[in-house]
Amino acid sequence: SDLFDDRDKAVIAWAEAVTDRTAHDDDAAFVALRAHFDDREIVELTLICAMWNLSNRFAEALCLVVEPPGQRIAFQPTDLARDAAEGE
Image (cartoon, rainbow, N blue to C red; front, top):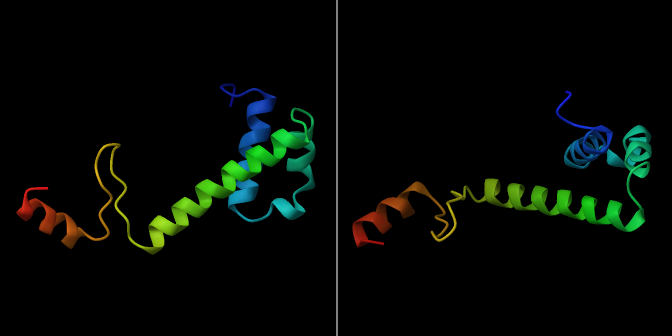
């Protein structure tokens, strides 16, 4: 896409490799990333990707309903119904 420059594309490719758990063997993605970022920045990008993956997997496993800021997270649709009945 013309919407992204080479730096953006390198980050997207790396995020996909981390998410797909193929980053360990994806030399092309790492080389592209290395062209734009130093070691510290690569570690930070990898950590951000990993933390979002952890958060997504955690929420999915517990069937969490992610809600807008300022509202609480409900575990199940029955929690939402109970909260509605209790006026929360």
